[in-house]
Length: 255
Image (cartoon, rainbow, N blue to C red; front, side, top):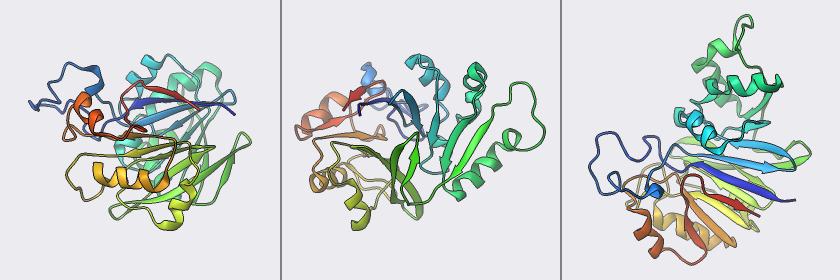
């Protein structure tokens, strides 16, 4: 099966440029240094799957010019990964087919609290419909495709990464157990968060990301969830191994 993935966003919770920041990254004219909040759009077997839907979703999906979404996989409940949910209204009303949401119970609890008007009370014009599917760390099926959740830790918060075929996606993590790493083995493409060069309490830094990539040994790896503290794109890419790439917004990959 062919998988096509588009990086809708590759930035952190603040995005890049950061409001009011005068650093060289935030002032860069290179479009690859401008990063919306992290999200991945995957097309496979004529289905479109979104991993996370942040506050920049409207802008991201208009750039992509693809307005059909069959399912959304949530990694965790932080708002930079969920806040675009309301912008699904016009997408739902194009074909009026409930959009399937997949998340852990704790994530759905937070989403229902943040967007109670979407899940409580009577239907009203413009209100989208969703199919809620509670998942755990066990494999599950979407459209006859196996999805393997990967348990990672975002400091003290449990987060899910996902493996779909030979593509694996990990965001907002600073620890993965050996058992969960085993689920990543054999991935052709590994997408992994890499916040900055300095150590961070809840995200992998560049050195930690590269160490994990060397351990998993994918054919190619892409760094995402990148902050302005990492440095400018054109300089950082020179420091990376030949099979590791600094992802950027609107980058499309196929495997």
